[in-house]
Length: 102
Image (cartoon, rainbow, N blue to C red; front, side, top):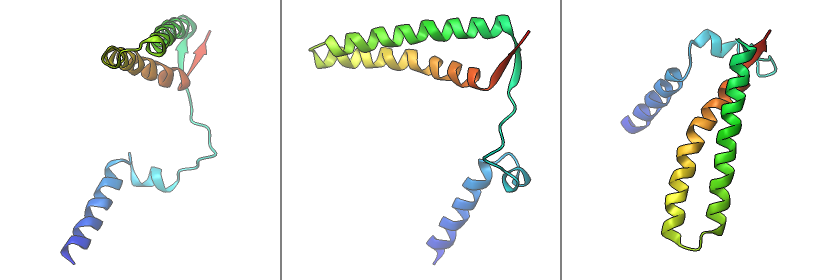
């Protein structure tokens, strides 16, 4: 019985910790578009160029992985892929949440 109560309490705490506020969660509307943060056009262009460069690096690493016969060498390439993928995902997330302003 204690285990069930403790599990319920932990689940409630985990749910509350992921929300900014209970009122925000209660009134959440999935059909409502999120507002995008405005950024100057030059900054958006710089972010797009950086994302394009990281995408090119990612594609180059993927081609090397596909052509590498050695398993251990592929593992090192996967580490490189991960190293490039993390900042790329952050950039893509930032770009999806912004809009360019003139």
